[in-house]
Length: 94
Image 1 (spheres, rainbow, N blue to C red):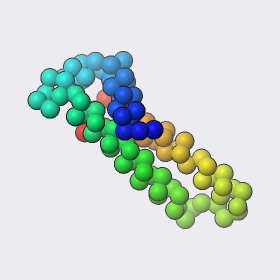
Image 2 (image 1 turned 180 degrees about the vertical axis):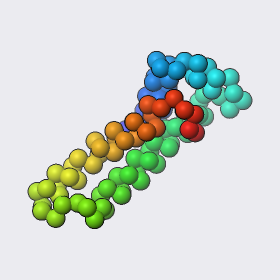
Image 3 (image 1 turned 90 degrees about the vertical axis):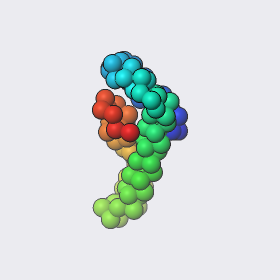
Image 4 (image 1 turned 30 degrees about the vertical axis):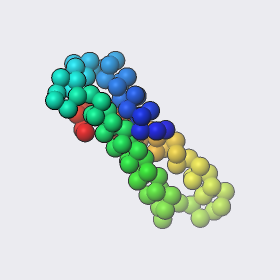
């Protein structure tokens, strides 16, 4: 997923779940676009950081098949973490 895609998801989430916050952000001197851009960038940074950590984790299985399975699950796992902890949140974290 791209930073722009994460930003769009966050905007959609706020539109549906906290339109008041969306309006509040839009009224700030900074505006909505830079806020959403930062959210998207933070999401990408978080994704890259978590992916790297998981791929180099000493807790990965040593058995080849199990290790391969664990490595293949990383992108989906990381995506869920980013969505849950950053994109689908109503607090202003940027």
